[in-house]
Length: 183
Image (tube, rainbow, N blue to C red):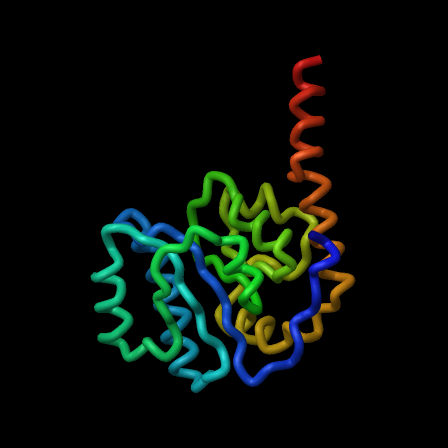
């Protein structure tokens, strides 16, 4: 609920969440995460970690890449979850490095969970995240800066983002659009 949304306080370490299917057809999306983690390592950024949730036929290969590049202090594979909404709320932000989303349900859950969502421009994010500022990942340096200043995002801004998404995608809004369509 909207009243459960609170700003993220200043912290020594920010933990993000990335939810996706870890399958061979998502290699490009996972490689974007790997490249971000390599960037953090190269720049000696130690206060940002990403928890990855999901299952699929690429988990072992993905983890081999994580370990081979010494990125296991940045990327934490957490397995599958049956509670994505709860997991989102237990993290400081959502990052999504996916280039091909047909519909951005995960973005809706992120914003309604009161979290700042950072994502690539894709079909789903362009449709869902319209009107929400500082969302699209411009560069890895930009993303690091945004995450390090996440405590500057006010509760009011997070609630405004909630209202934007809710006005377009809440059950009531979707039902009204469907009923208008039937008329």
